[in-house]
Length: 142
Image 1: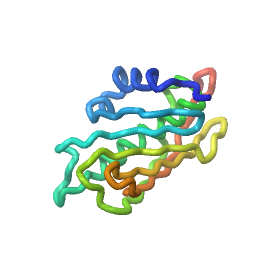
Image 2: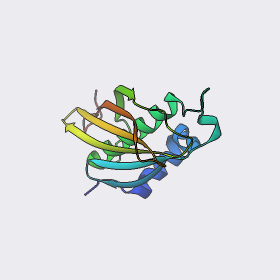
Image 3: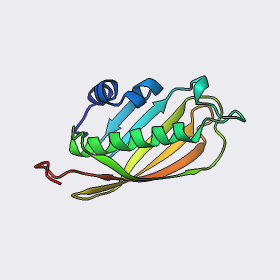
């Protein structure tokens, strides 16, 4: 069972992740170690050539990883990205993107995750991201 609800995560997005809120990020579902997120298509996300820009796909991947981490540790806002790698696999069409995130390994101080990004119109994978999140100690010391 997830330690954070969809509604709690959306409140964090609205109040503290302005970049994600402005992009329209929406958490569709969350369970322990997994999350499904949607990045609605907006004209300003296109790059020359009609593809959705890489930074927008990275935004989706990072937000999805954050949701997965919080599903495991609860509302710990100081969990931060320490590494993000992404492979762009095919050109997405101008439609919503879906991010399917899951935990690969959860340690005491680090979480390793992956996100598959799909074009919502074809459900084909357009990018694959892996990342690492730093988990703060329970007492807040670094």
